[in-house]
Image 1 (tube, helix red, strand yellow):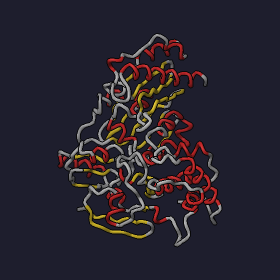
Image 2: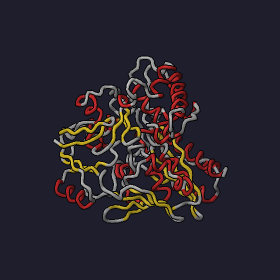
Image 3: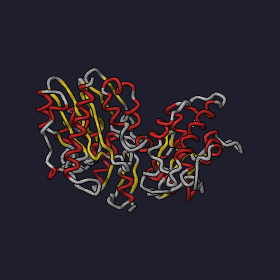
Amino acid sequence: MFAFNYHRPDRIEEALMRARDSGDAKFLAGGQTLIPTLKQRLAAPGDLIDLGSIPGLAGIEVTPQAVTIGAMTRHADVAASPEIRRAVPALAELAGLIGDPAVRNRGTLGGSVANNDPSADYPAACLALGATIRTDRRALPAEAFFCGLFETALEEDEIVTAVSFPVPAAAAYRKFANPASRYAMAGAFVARAGEGVRVAITGAGQDGVFRWIDAEEALTAVFAPTALDGLALSADDMIADMHGDGAYRAHLAAVMTRRAVAALAAG
Amino acid sequence: MTSLSITVNGRPVAAEIDPRTLLVQFLRDELRLTGSHVGCDTSQCGACTVHLDGRAVKSCTVLAVQAEGAQVLTVEGLAAGKALHPMQDAFREHHGLQCGFCTSGMIMAGIEIVNRHGFALDEHTVREALEGNLCRCTGYHNIVLAIIGGAEAMARLPGATPAAAG
């Protein structure tokens, strides 16, 4: 790890001020991605601003319309929340599939969306449910927030404060996890709301999480796994690495989508 | 340097540390609590598992300064004098180890499994909940038996409730 100055502000205003003064700062949430990145010397911020002591950034609020989760809420708390399990069980289930139990005890929703790893789980839920990402200064729809591989619409000194997920009529998430890292090799989040169906794919796309529009249209017409017959994602647009090539991931993303749809169609 | 005040195994500790210090480095190198091991150093193997405010974490992926004000419990803090914690005793009883390198992390993970899932554990639950703890000897069979047995023994502790077990 390269040296950094460590700050632990107890107010968000102070965190923002530190970041502006530094010009070379990183915010630390749960640290389950950032600390390994620092250890590998893949990041060398001059200042590390720990958000762990700022009150009000963690918590869960459920209304009939939306589930709002504070940015510093740990994955384990989302997975175990009885309110979320009732309102959007797929979201609690997704949180319970991230990493392993000890990672889920530290990792946070805000850290996950701010990092926008192309194989992370939460971005798929955000996109499929049409979530709103709230920051210290604005509210952004998920589609405007995620801008490609590890890229978001966040300014350098902007902090995610909460994510608000509209409650769907039904939703399911299926992922094929890398056996070692537990990151998604491909994951599909399928949500039904009103007349429409939304399908978000993570783990597969070269530009990170994306909506599979062809599948959405087919499933809106007929909501059954067979509606996806004949549809295929382009292997050229998929991640190809030591774990699997583009054709494998394109196929796997479709299989995960079918499984999610089958789970929902079975009621 | 950053000042740090934490409680480790019930004992208050204050130190001035480089903020880069990982929690596991602080425990091992500064406090000489070498029961928590650094196996992979990439948050996969779980040999460094300790409890931070009652929850299992990988201490190779937590900065010591992030634990400011917190309660840290390591494997050294489990026994009451010479009496082993029931989970430690269960690992001895079931021979839940081969080389022993992963054992302290397994024991700390095992206690959290009881805290989360209760005293009556089935094999499937334990195996799923151990996904972040690797045994390179592949001695999982007896590790799983030990955790199930340890959970039953923890239920017999006076005043036992899962939340108070760790």
